[in-house]
Image 1 (tube, helix red, strand yellow):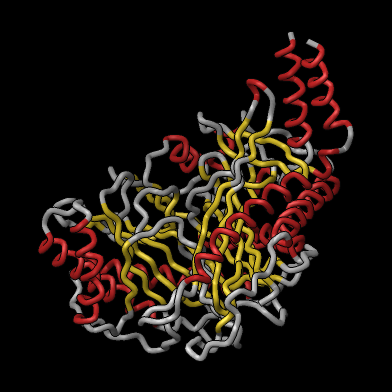
Image 2 (tube, chains in turn green, orange):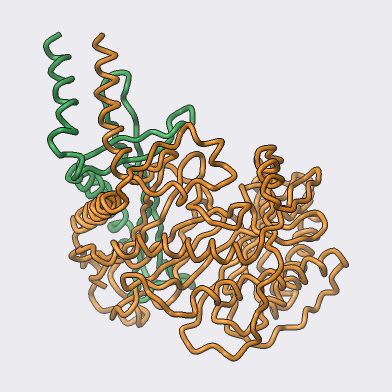
Length: 114
Length: 444
């Protein structure tokens, strides 16, 4: 019971401590297609997005670098689309927000973007 | 008791955001939808200056957070050793381009988007006066692979057939098409029709703005029949893609068009000319917002059963997408475009509320079993475009201040929906509106 009220106090403190001024709202739709808005801190957003794009790069580049030159066709551009799972909230009010992004990898200094 | 208190706390978090990070209601709620959405629209603060400050802070946070995330990427110089077989523009494989979205919720809250659909109008802002920027206009990365044909107006029939053959074989091999010969015949005919229709788009309209690309998506059923409109749950999709190569003289179409297709072609040319004139009228000042300049404009077009061309409202009955690009050179002298007439807005679904709104506001419309065509005053549409550019300018102004170390915002792509009144609001898909942000890697 104590823990529940502790959570309540922490939750109530968020808007009072000024965290909102450094927060980023994530906006999406829930299962019933109603808008869902959840606030994450700027630091958390940067951390999650950074981890996601780094993971994408770490997966893609080794494979791309292993490709041998030759043949009539050369791979110049790869587009990867990713959703970052950022589940935020407590108990029945949990909301799942999925910031989406796309990263384009290329081996050209003057790429034609798709 | 605890749950009620918890709901209040969670609500307080959301309300704290709703009351602060909100954009003006007329940015995203179209007049004909306002009465429908009134329950969802929260009250906007009465202090616009404070509201703008809060929005600026939020945008700065989003740009900085994305910049910080991208700066975590390390530059990998593997495979960077010289190799004579490499092309001149070779660089080690690297992440070059990153896009994500801003969103505006049904209650006006601005934030990062977590869901997205297809807009009807999208404008592209690019940072100017930078030493390094992509030389080729960037197009939005595709969301899904789709069989396609890149066509030019003077492409011989043999080349069209040769290009179509691999996707035809792939579609048949996929088991979704039963009649290969019918598919080949119908798709070839559709390709040649498309080629004939776009040949007129190569004419230089004499404006700053010209058509740089036209895309048309068709659907194919199991019998190999090709239909010119996308339908929901369609069997197989195929895309025709035409990109203009700076030709000033239109290529004469080789194929003799049927009367209906000829009318479609003629109406398409009229639509292009009128839209280019509208864009010209509102952008000739060459204004830039925070170093960003509008350089590309994409509009979703549709055609009614009678061949009327207009901007498509909603996702149904989309004929294709037209991209307008802007020349940086001085335009040729052109006749002053008269500002009378109407813009057709085609809505696939029969919205009773929209028709009532049109009647109340004296907007003429024509309802057929398949769609409703609203006749929107062109001068009002032009004003709507101007306002849309101001909205884009707001986002661009903040993007120009983002201090990323290695990654920079180079493009902003707000997407708009057209109102029956001619105004434009940031497009809502589901209940969300979006603005696409594009970051480029400065290391290469």
